[in-house]
Length: 217
Image (tube, rainbow, N blue to C red; front, side):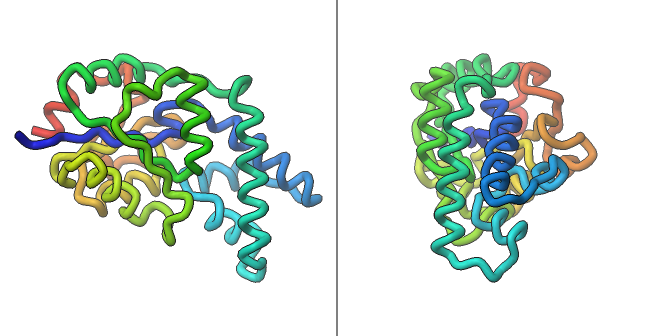
């Protein structure tokens, strides 16, 4: 029997974390005497911290300093989770359906593992997942497909039998490069910027009940 996997991005897919991440970046850069605009934030949402910091600060910053800044940003983010994060519409229903239909479900997030664990604990969703993967220490961020390929392998699924749920432009591209089907939700970007996905919806509550089956055959 073929293993079929549902690979969930975390930020903007399972949880509405955008405001908490934005506030954390603003707080970090305020500590540096600098500013981050919402436009800068939206352009990089879905990428891991080191590529973002290199983009915003330039290539001349030492790796040790970048790692320290990335760690501090995530500390600030976790302080904001309780007051600024909630489960997105339709997520719980689809997690229940996925479990009832025998899919292996995986979180594959660019964020650090501490964030994944803290978010799932706060939202009480941890028991729905068979594996949790962080791309924080992979050498390349999305749109590189490595994170999603590792996620499928973690539960014994092939890319052809894996469905990614994403909200980011780079995440949709990563799913396509991995040879996986993809549902995109317009939490962070408008539908036209996510149009390369197999299916684009406002939120998971808008999906037909057979959406997973149709995409995975």
